[in-house]
Amino acid sequence: MATKKRKKARAASKRIVKLKAKKPSAKAANNGLPRPSTKPWGKAGKALQGIRILDLSHVQAGPTCTQLLAWFGADVIKVERPGVGDITRGQLRDVPDADSLYFTMLNHNKRSITLDTKHPKGKEVLERLIKCCDVLVENFGPGVLDRMGYTWEHIHKLNPRMIVASIKGFGPGPYEDCKVYENVAQCAGGAASTTGFRDGPPLVTGAQIGDSGNGLHLAVGIVTALYQRDRTGRGQRVNVAMQDGVLNLCRVKLRDQQRLQRGPLAEYSQHGEGIPFGKSVPRAGNDSGGGQPGWILKCKGWETDPDAYIYFITQAPVWEKICDVIGKPEWKTDKDYATPKARLPRLKHIFATIEQWTMTKTKFEVMEICNAVDIPVGPILSMKEIAEEPSLRKTGTMVEVDHPTRGKYLTVGNPIKLSDSISEVKRSPLLGEHTEEILGAVLGYSAKEVAEIKSSGAVTPPEKVRAAAA
Image (cartoon, rainbow, N blue to C red; front, side, top):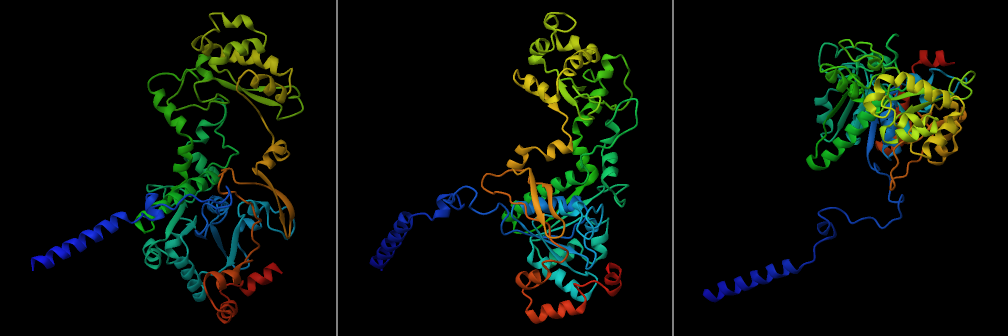
């Protein structure tokens, strides 16, 4: 008996030795991660390759988000109403019977399927899409998705791994049921009250911080939720309120609101002019909003060119160089100008003096002279100048795209550059262009079933829509 026990022990010991001697797998050797790719940089696939997005969004905020994900390689399936599509297809149209630039510039790299989600067959197709996608993106009005029958609970039951990403106007609170558009978000998020000149009305900015800005916020939330899903195996809700997103971009003004309770904001030009502050952060004109005073100054040709201006920052470390450039070397030692604190009450006079110099140069000459000595300045570039800038095309920031009905047009490319996931900008889809492809190749319907779906009216426009289009 003892001999048998010893033999078993020796056998077990040998097995342990063998297990210890066994080489770890490639994954184990890399902490559970795959070995680094040996493919050339940019040839190892796109960052979001294999991720499928169900895009129920429209207009700007949602489509901005899904377009960015598509640029990174996600397969974005845009669901549109038969015969109508995203409302922006026809808004601000500049070429008759062609999709507008409003639509084309927000829907690159996507596939379009037309679907009547109220039709029984349409609901069936939509539910099959939910089951095979990773993310659902929507920016309907408050409660619309729930009223369609697609509550979070129902979606999660259909696909526990589904991430449901939503953009709404407001978060929980007194205004959560209100509809919100770009400029409403700018006003509700604090941007408008702090934009403009102090003796004028609040102003909205031309940058679409409410719509496109929150599309970017939502994209970050989606990618983060996908990363967490790798650990938990389950999806979650991602919500962005437009008011919250605008406030996030206005955080320096919230900073100033708190500082204002403890005394005047010395870097605001009104302080130097002896104008008292009120209870809220004022509109600051072209003040920089940071610790380095700045202002927009006229340049040569300003009389006829509305964009012949430059933003000039009087950064403290290069103050002496500024004095030399503008021909005021005596200011370097003058007690009224030599220190940042001494300069604050005199900013209006200082910028007026600098402007006398900038008016003798073009904005590009000012930029060349100042950058040579590290003085921070920025020319006011018009949209025409940006559109014609060769360097922006070379980097893919501006891209020319060929469209089958409207011809070539210029659009923005991916602003985020990844060295191993090269973005390619492909044209936006025609309405319903990929309907049959998605029904067959993605959802697995047979040719017979596709024909039945088409004849049912679930993916084709009603008679009255077809008549109106004709």
